[in-house]
Amino acid sequence: MIYFHLKLVSISQKRYVWGLLLLLGLSFSACEPEDDTVVIPPNQAPVIQRLTPNINKQLLPQNETLSLSFKLADNEKLAKFRLDLQLRLPDGFLIADSLITESNISGTLETVEEDISLAGFPLFSQLVFTATVTDADNEIATDTYELAILSEDLQPPLFKIFSLIPSIMIR
Image (cartoon, rainbow, N blue to C red; front, side, top):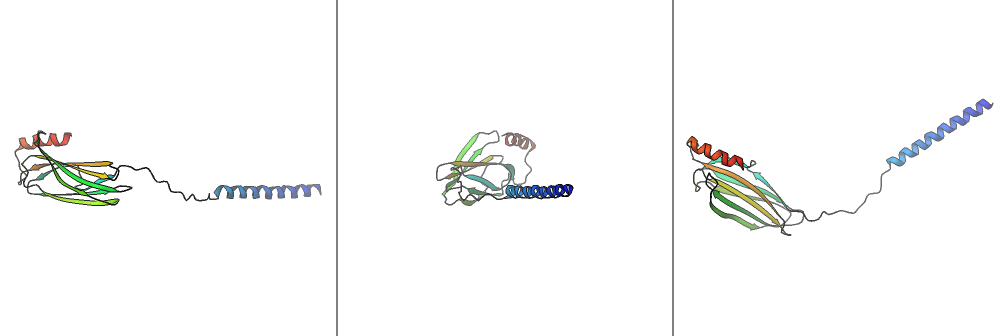
């Protein structure tokens, strides 16, 4: 009889332990209440991404039209887009520095496109385009794209190609 009583106690203790383990497991898996507060990050600089061309430097013939497109974004509000051009000789000497376009923009996401004919630029010159976006708090972001102008037949003298390629690739 004592043996039977001890066996019943041990079974009830096992049930007690299993019950505690079950409650403990449920308490660990219980979800905490959701926090409805939204943390807004402080103002950051805008973002500019060049969509086309998708490479940073290239060689193009003089008869081409260059299509530049940019995606602009800011977490608060965009204000201005500007596209500048520097025209350089193959040795890097600056010939001209000019503004291609400047426009006021708004919103938080914008796409800007610009088509530029390369026909008027001197052969073997380098074009350096700098796109700048400014947000409402005067924070800025820039993107630079470089290309070199080749002749229309794409067969310039070898000394011109070899003098052009190192200056484009080193920067």
